[in-house]
Length: 350
Image (cartoon, rainbow, N blue to C red; front, side, top):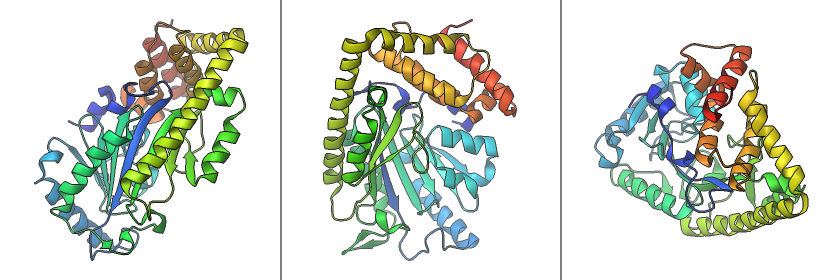
């Protein structure tokens, strides 16, 4: 597998299947791990980062779970390829900014990605479609166990796993769920929901995680604290909160259908019409319109497009993806034209 193969690859988390996949786009478990007796990446010199990278690469090469993974050094990628990996949620913006001693490992179905020498020596990420934190944790735990047998991680009996950021200390696990909440936004209940999320010490972020704002009615909800809680307790707490949000979104959708169906249908079909016929369109407008079409498909108002296709489009219309599809760098205006073309082809427009 090569990085260009990702363009035609349908990541497992985009498939639009699994529990509550009409509202929950994906579930993610992230683990932070650091090698014992080694400086954290932000304190390590270039030579030390290179040595740490070699130790990790040599180790994963001996672990069967990592067989057939794509291994990429950041120094080997241009800016478009780096942005492609960010757009596919396979690595962070921070990981793309500096290349020294950094790498990423990616599994074939993009369920697993591992950043080497990001904020921590290892940032292991596991993603699945729908609400599936329990199964995702099982996968994460198996990889963590395999690595722990061969690598000594920085660990304290009192504090748990030691991490570059103190808030990650403990299990060093963050569970997160990507939610599509258009009805709560349309009924103006979303601020109340997000305030309750914050009050319960959970974080809410945008489509691309930390440091991003919500667009297209997509919200990522995650735990903020891992110290003093086991991994199972963290997952149970997240599942409990997400279950309540799902119920509120379902009630809001039902209320819209019962009380204001003409307005809802008009908004959905207008969005669908623009996407199928536009010849120039920005990424932000596209995401907002796709959100309404996704809602229409989930409510069976639109019957000739499925959730999987919409999920794929949310990624394919991003700048780096458009440039990889076209095979060359594009200006902002050229991307707006190419984006409209890709959408029309996918949705059967003119």
